[in-house]
Image (cartoon, rainbow, N blue to C red):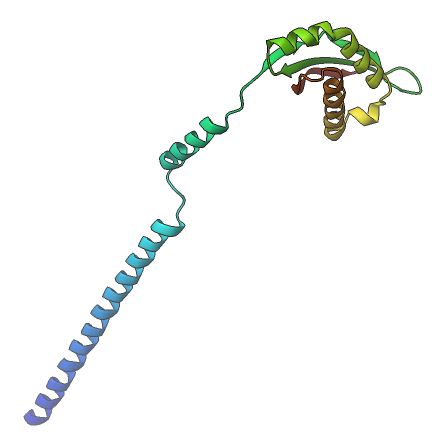
Length: 167
């Protein structure tokens, strides 16, 4: 019986060592794969830190930063809208962005023409046309186009509504 116990004991010990060796190899393999995956993620897929992105974007912003032109504030407009009952009023204040001081001087001289054009256009609109954001954008675009026709060859860079009240 003693001889029978010895062979079993020697057989069980190598099985434990081989299982232990298998677990060690699997653990090292998993760690290696995990480390490689982490490295690949950080190198190729992870978003850049804010400091690096900010440095990159600052260069782009400096190059693409639009120059703000000269501003001309027009007097407020109060007009009746094309409402069948005639009870709707629009109060609108516009500021124009122009290219330079000479364009501002020319626009100041042409102010009566610009005001007349705005009044004629706004009185032809009704409440439903101007109350949506798309309607306001359409009015701004149309005013910009008409202003640029009057101001040729100078160019109006933008029109800004600083006050827009409908009653």
